[in-house]
Amino acid sequence: MLSLTEVRTGPRQQALPKASEPIAALIALEPQAWQDLFEGHFRKMYNFAYVRTGDAHLAEEIASEVFAAAARAISRYRDTGAPIGAWLYRIARNITADYVDRRARRPVVSIDTVQLETENLTLGVENAADLAQCVARLTREQQEVIALRFYNDCSLQEAAAALGKSVGAVKLLQHRALAALRRHLDPEATR
Amino acid sequence: MMRYHEALSRCLEAIAEGRDLDTVIAALPARHRDRLRRDATLAEAVRRHAATVPAPSAAAEANALSRLNAELSSVRASRETSTSRSGFFGVPRFALAGLFLAALLVGVSFLLSYSDEGVRVEAAEFEGVVVANGDGSLTVQTLDTLEEVMVPLEAQVLDENGTPLELGAIEAGEVVVVHGDRERGGPVRAFDVRRRLDGLPGWCDENAERCRRIAQNLKDAQARCESDTQVCRLLHDRAADLITRVTDVADLEDLRQRCLNAGGEECRDITSFCREHPDACTRDFPPGPVVDRLEDARDRLQQLDGACGERDTRACRNIAQLCAEHPVLCTDAPLRDAPAPDQRTR
Image 1: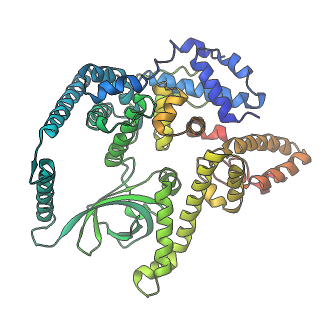
Image 2: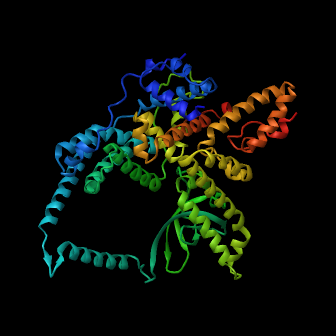
């Protein structure tokens, strides 16, 4: 039986910084505050964009655009108590959606070297390409919740803030995303 | 009674905290355990896949940081400038600059919007629901109007994922995004037509308000049509079914949102709605919170189907009853994968 304690290598990623403390410094355009924001979130924005686009170069471009857009928009930021990361994710959602619309790309993840442990997976996950292709077939919101929860290890609360939804709605969306993924991976098993 | 999505969330959270899968699942309702194990394992596979995502290159990260710093410098400079601006006859300089810029833009766009022949040509970009497809053109209901879109042979016609399509493959009721241009008062000439992969239900799911508006626009256009023009004949002949489909999908999305927000009675309305409008409920993604109840029912249906196959007449009767309660499970759509009722009532 698969023991998931063995495969999780560490504690959940550090929670996103709370809005109240760094926001004043960000609004004041203090270099160190922006450096910290960048270091803390660049990879997350990249991962998010990567899941949606399946293109590493495009994901780099989008992550870069997210921070440039954030710098332009910070004076209009309204502190709602949500983590600043949620605001960045919202920018990333919009920018990524624009890119996806413009370029009409879906995730085509290059995963030649990936080895998934499949002995306990009875879901048709024979290789990572299957998984990537199935993620590509999810709806935008389903991809987003998968990116936030499983690629970026966001908590339910963080994902809810990023998606502008209630925690309950995120639980449901997460369930629907996994159910859809399972159906795509192995249509026969769900019959 | 704990709903499945709640149990799944608890399971995933506990696992994320490093607890053992078996222990976690054992503490959750027995009826969910098999599915929890499957979904938790799938979630873990996704997490493992996440670990294989290539890191952004150091060069890209450095460039992004450099771009951010440049942007910050620009914003700082802009702030400093704005604080030192003085007025001109009481009008702030930035306002004068804005007026100048606006005048310049109007002039440039005027020049750009005229082709060599002096005919006004405008860029056109919109999304909408296809009402008809024929003779190399699409009729598309957008948020604002019914557009006639000429699709020349050199235009790209693609699925959303970039797969080339024959124009004829696009059907009424599908959602397309069109890029092209238009001469003043004339039809749009498309450069590029992209068909949404998840169709009308998927689009309405993401754009509930726009879906609702398009349904209303179609109704309005049909109501206004009294003449014998081609557009009116088209609306008369082909739009009725489409209006019903768009309206049903929009209604379902409204119900789903109300169910998400209020739960309880609002969620029960979805089941009733799906009973009355099974076509609107035949998509991959079951409508919101009823998914648990439906999936529970599907599990039960599969069990009964096995028993019915072994000549258990009570099981066969129960299948008929379950299908009556959840007709959405007994159609041909993906959620309704169990055999149709006439096959079951053996």
